[in-house]
Image 1 (cartoon, rainbow, N blue to C red):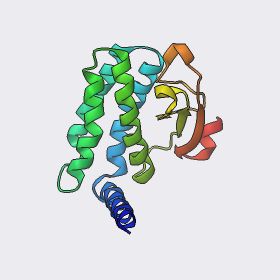
Image 2: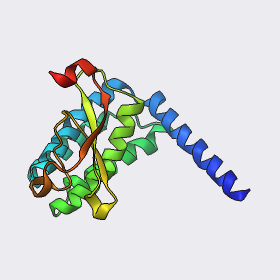
Image 3: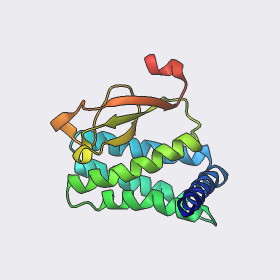
Length: 172
């Protein structure tokens, strides 16, 4: 019985966090962090730590406009923390690990709040990343560009689903 109560409480907390997303965050704000996030993804896929750090700095600048009152504060902190680690990463492996956490945050944000732009965005997944635990990320096209392996296994992974943009644009 105790495990059922813990599970129910966990689900209730998860739902309230998602609702905080939709109340505090707006698609117009999400738009401001999508491009810097995608620049980090492309830089890591290209084995370019300096470019990933530059994208992280732009992301953090955009986060200055994030909702920060009440329930939104925790979400804003969760969005910023991994990107700060990318901005100050001592090597690309550290940046890639932080990008995994950032990707989880961005996928939830895009799926639950949305964006105003009609450009397509997809989730991709590499089952081999992080010692076989796998890693998901967002990218802007259907051709896998793996940020967790870069040139070592650039195309490793698969597109999971489209999470933004109109379906018509994905095949242009």
